[in-house]
Length: 220
Image (tube, rainbow, N blue to C red; front, side, top):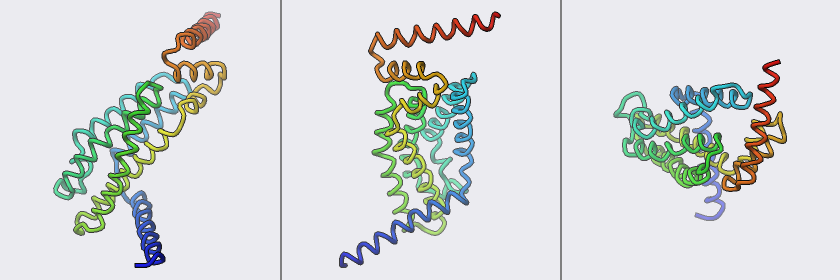
């Protein structure tokens, strides 16, 4: 096979891969992920609008999704019936994919450890995408839907892992506290240098000042 033929074959493989993802996103009903995705969007809206409950909704929704992936992947990932799946792939995928929701909790809450978890997800989840796709090409007809759904699920979660691994926390902080540039600046310094006592003291002093101002305004 010459170089032109190889490039043509690789091009066809790439087209088939992304076509499967596009079609799957249009017709596949991953209701569980959709529900939790909506909850996460709502929680982020609450956080960025500074409404109470945003962090709680975020932590509960993503932690629950992670638990479901870890414990019930064989049920969530099957196609119509429990027998319509590669159960080993479902279980292994569930273990590695469960890292991503927890990593996103740490990322959105600006907790230490998010970078490490997202790096692990970036290294493992793309392998699941490729594995699911190649297994699906040779699968029996009744398993085609299962493998297509696995490709969609792993591709979407892999993309999120890569996106938030490379997205600096400072961007999220500035989005959340854009109405107060000084607070945003102090939070960036505090969260990106958690061991720096000077940054922590400046942050805490400014937050106390804001709380005191709000309390005084509320009493008027």
